[in-house]
Length: 431
Image (cartoon, rainbow, N blue to C red; front, top):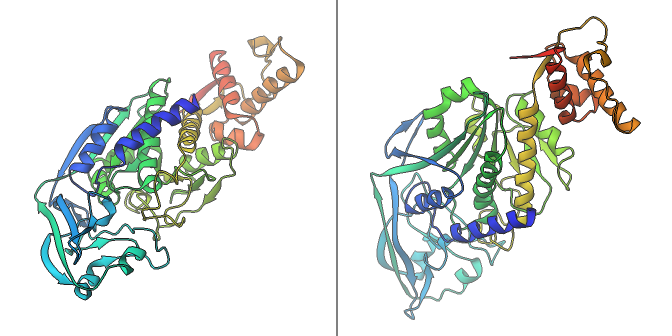
């Protein structure tokens, strides 16, 4: 099953990889079209110029062609060869420049001479190209023809969401972004893991409602909060940003600003045992090399949103370069990530706050049909111990996660015993 899932993820990766994505535009819409094959996305188009808190939705970026011709009339840079060659959100330009004049519009990485950097200029109009430092040094003196046929139009910015209803209106949010061109870990791993997580959860019974959001980073989450922020404040039980989750590396979890939170507790409980790698947990920070958790956890909202990743944003050498490619990522690791996030959802779904209705002394379990009579003695003892822990701590102030953390009993065994005790009339669930 895991091998089949990894193969499915790889097939969708190969279809999404060539698309030129940005904050807006045709590449983003094509990305959402392909993802819509995996989950029923509802599209939202936010018009250019829309005010969202302190930000303004930018004009839509249109790219027709962009290339550089050297003095020998060879096309040495072309956005059709690699999406990263064009400065993202580059202004249009046509002209002939000397090598020295051109240099001010070129971007490369001297410390990574074979990597093409990913550079953006979303909110200031400039034009430019990105190339490996080795290729930059090889550019001969002479005159260069520059063709950047781009445009800025009053269009819209694309967001999409899908909601999986459960028995409860309380929600779990999974948010990921679809704005980076030609990056495997920093871009496509997040949307792919999130989309395949939806597919898995759609086949399972659910207590909670699950909301999946695909949007451009920062401005997209701000626009989404502008639309749905109050709803999330009222309904969100837990939330997670999914990003940089495609490497064969230990999991990383970044806590929400709100501590404690159910999001943090469920994530840390699952990561302590669910992965074949040791996981690292980090405290919340709004500093650079963060993602959309900064918006969800901003003080006006303070939503319980953490971050699931394999490598933290900005903390691997291939970050924001052409080296973040198919060879870098592991589709098996992405499939494993889907499994870990399913485990988190299972914990969230299982978690209730039980209250013992017979709190004076321990109930007579056999009288209520709750003392097991079959199975090995070790299995019977585990069931009895779980029931005893449950009934002792079921005072309305401990949820099942708290009981599991204190007792060491698996939360799913506790959830099974809670259902049995509830059916026997021994306990109820607090809101």
